[in-house]
Amino acid sequence: MLAITSATAQTYDPSHPVCLQRWEWGGSTYFECAYTSWDQCRATTIGLAAMCVENPYWQGPQPRRSAGRIRSSTPY
Image 1: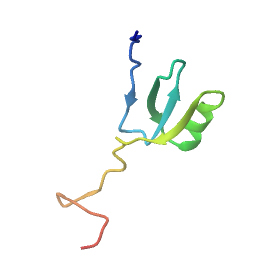
Image 2 (image 1 turned 30 degrees about the horizontal axis):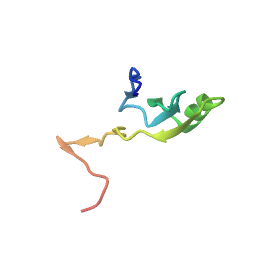
Image 3 (image 1 turned 180 degrees about the vertical axis):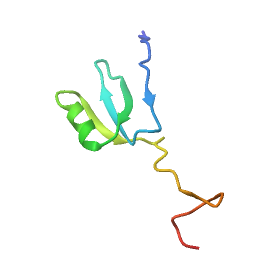
């Protein structure tokens, strides 16, 4: 017999580089990407079945525009 449970909403916010991965009773997990630093995320994990991971959808700092063109940080 299979048990069907409702899914927990996951937040992959591309403006935050760190996610909290949390395990819940019954084996389900979810991600909450709302942290700007590793220390901020680690402070949240205290007492939880959780760990901090890199946000796979983080956009990172955007390249600067110069004279209408995108400037790359890598040399030619």
